[in-house]
Length: 170
Length: 219
Image (spheres, rainbow over the protein chains, first blue to last red):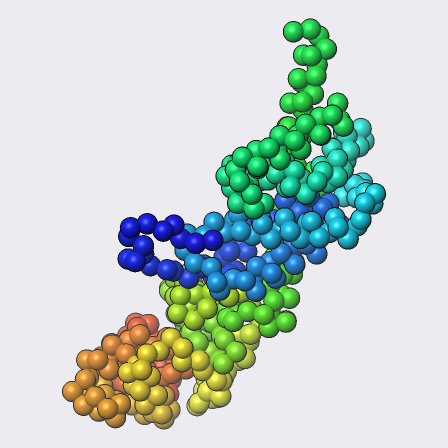
C-alpha cells in the first residue's frame, strides 16, 4: 500500500500511521462483524486477537494514503481462511443457540443459522466478498483491495457466492 | 411474471436483507468488539508488544495525560492539552505503535502523589528524551539538575547549556518541555525574580515554586 505516485510526489509528506489504539478503536467493529459472519462467534475472538496482533507487528511500515480499513480486513480475511483450513472439510460451525436473542422465534433463528452456515461453507474469496459487501457495506473496489484481487474478480466472486447461496437456500 | 417467479424474487431479496442484518450473534457487535479490543490492549501491554503506552495520571492540577516507552516517561501533558494531539505527535516522532496502558503510568502517579504531598524532593523514574532536540536536551538536562527549592534565571541556564546569549532560545526550549513537573522547568525564572513564562500557566508555576519553598506565598 503506497501513496499514489504523481507529479507532486516529491513534495508529498509521508506521515506516520495514526496511533495504533485509534486504529483499533476505529476498525474493531468492522473486523468483529466480518469475523462473526465469516468464522462464527466461537472462533471470532481468537481471530480478532490474531488479526490485530499481526496488524501491530506490521504497523510501523504504513504511511498516509493507505486504506487502513481494507488493510486490516485483508488480514482478517487471511485469518478466517486459516480457521477454515484448520477445521478441515466437513466440519460445520453450528450456530450457538444460547447466544441468540430471546425475541427471535425458533424458526427465524434456525433459518438465520442455516444462512450463515451456508455463507461459512463458501470458498474463501466468495465468502469474504459476500460478507464484506453485505455485512461490511463495502464498495467493490474496497472488497477487491481487501481480498487481494481485481475489482472485476471481486464482482465475480460476489456474484458466484450469492448464486450459490440462492441455490442452496431457495 | 407468474406467481412462482414473484415468490422467488421475494426470497432472493430476503437473502440479501438477511445478509445485511448479519448473523444474530453480531447483534451486540458494538459492545462485543469493544470488549475484545480491551482484551487485545491488555495482551499487547502484558506481552510488551507496543512501543508506547499511555494513560491518565491524577494530580492536584487535574488529570494529566502520560506516555511511557521502554526507556521511561516520554511525555506528560496538562489536563487542558488534547490527548489526541499528544498521541499524534508521539506517532510521528517516536512510533505509531501506541496503546492505552494505564498500569504503566501507575509508578509515575505514585511519585507525583508523593511530590505533591511534599514527601518527595526528586523523582526516581527514568525518562525518555526522544521528543527533545539537541539544544533542548542541553537546556533541560541543566534544568533537571536545579535542586528542589532552588531556581536559576533563563540567562544562567542558557549560559550553562553553552549558549550565553540564548536566554530567549533557552526560554523556548523550556516552554516546549515535554515532561513538565518532572523536568522542573518551573525552576527557571527571569533574572529580576519575575516568574517569566510557563507552558502550564503561571498559576501552576507559582504553585510548584511555593510547594517547594522557593517562593514564599504572599501574605
